[in-house]
View (cartoon, rainbow, N blue to C red):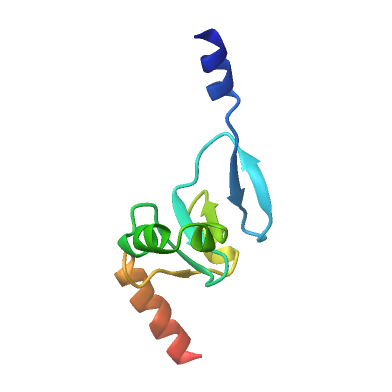
Length: 98
């Protein structure tokens, strides 16, 4: 039992930082993303969960996690149009203005 506690205390999560580089954290990410599509969203996003179910490793090999939204945006990711509709709409308006 003590060994299980020790392992969980040493748990490290691999997150993607604002600079786009992976690093280890003792805290899990609050957002997930797809490195290939450069999209971030909620961990319970229906689109991401469906992709994991339907494509398995072909999708999960590109899965990344972020500590927060600022890190995702700074790393060059855009919000998901499904689970983050308001943020996606704002991002889209900004893209159209460029």
